[in-house]
Amino acid sequence: MSKLDVVLGLQWGDEGKGKVVDVLTPGYKVIARFQGGPNAGHSLKFDGDGFVLHTVPSGIFRRDSMNIIGNGVVLDPVILMDEIKSIEEKAGDISGRLQISKRTQLILPTHRVLDAASEAAKGKSKIGSTLKGIGPAYMDKTGRNGLRVGDLLSKDFQKKYEALKLKHYGLLSQYDYSYDISEYESDWMRAVEEMKRFRFIDSEFVVNSYLDDDVPVLAEGAQGSMLDIDFGTYPFVTSSNTMAAGVCTGLGIAPSRVGKVMGIFKAYCTRVGSGPFPTELSDETGERLRQTGHEFGATTGRPRRCGWLDMPALKYAVMSSGVNELIMMKADVLNDFDVIKVATAYSIGGRIVDHFPYECDEVTPVYTEFKGWKKDICGVRDYDAFPQELKDYVSFIEKETRCPVRIISVGPDRKEIVLR
Ligand code: GDP
Ligand code: IMO
Ligand code: MG
Image 1 (cartoon, rainbow, N blue to C red):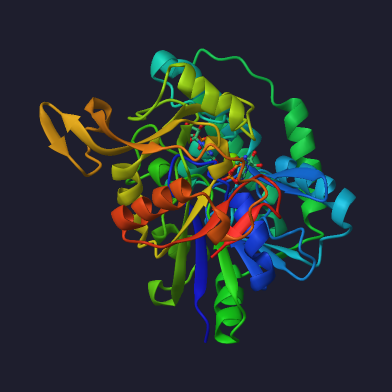
Image 2 (cartoon, rainbow, N blue to C red):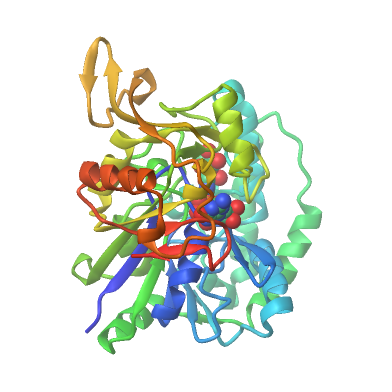
């Protein structure tokens, strides 16, 4: 009986989960997404091509893999079918290699409008949502109003859809917001029909029986720990559990079946959208990180906020998910920096704390400085060949987090990776 391994983001998303899952997939047979939806943008680069996946697991370009969209995901049929079209242009028919849980929640066209109306009404205090309808779709899930992929097969589907849409119209009447869903709705209905060539499965049974049969399964997270609905920087978070706990509810497996928890972080830090970001740099160093790291959203194109690595936040994420292996991304972005800083504690009301506090919007970071390596490391494939300054940086992170760094990524391509 094998255990299920997990890859998840430890910061505010965009750590490089897509790339890492693509790199690790040959070691697994099954890749399963457990939460989030098309708010995610997971970039893959190989053979001179680039792809951004939103709903489909990042194992899809490895021909031997089975990919599952889990019950914890919220799915927009239009975005899914667009994505599948572009994948199939490269990889051919994937209908035998992608399965969707019947319990996956559907994002309706009116969920997108509700998301936009709610954000517009919030004005300056908006979350900075990706406007994909994520919040409203999860609200309908917990409110027990939502529709699921399994409902698409019901003869009453159209009736259920119309009833929910009417409910949404009622909610929308409270906003001063004009909208017209007619075009998106007809795309949506078409996409729903096209989706039916994929298998809708009882994914909890499928995933558990893969594990019973010793088939290696990898769970792919979306967003990052600091966007977790319970433990992130609430209310500036997404609407799902992005931490390891989300794997159990998002795929229907028991905690005792979770194996390795691999946590991904960038060698620095980014965030897109509003909310606390203690180490954010609003100066030219922040701009330099953004330009060198091409820090623009994969889903929305928005410039990402950039700053130094935040150790209290990283340790918080490692603790909350029981991370036992770390993966450091984008080390190459720091190639030319003379000095690299890491926040190792915060000052809050004259006190120094070394944990991530509830009052995270009131903290000032206390930094430790490291000497930069000032070398191009993109061509390095062997840990021993790294400059000593980079090894010192890695050792420091391992000591602080009490967790080994097993993989270091040195460029966006599948091949630009150092495995220890
Ligand atoms: P995800 O949402 O966690 O999958 O991450 P994104 O795809 O949104 O953002 C990561 C970005 O960094 C993408 O543009 C990747 O192509 C790129 N990337 C991933 N790993 C590396 C790396 O090691 N170095 C550099 N320079 N870019 C990377
Ligand atoms: P991946 O999987 C970065 C952010 C949004 C916003 C907040 C809520 O690519 O790492 P939502 O649309 O969920 O209501 O937005 O969460 N956000 C992400 N930031 N990467 C993501 O996904 C994100 N998904 C949502 O910017 O601040
Ligand atoms: Mg992303």
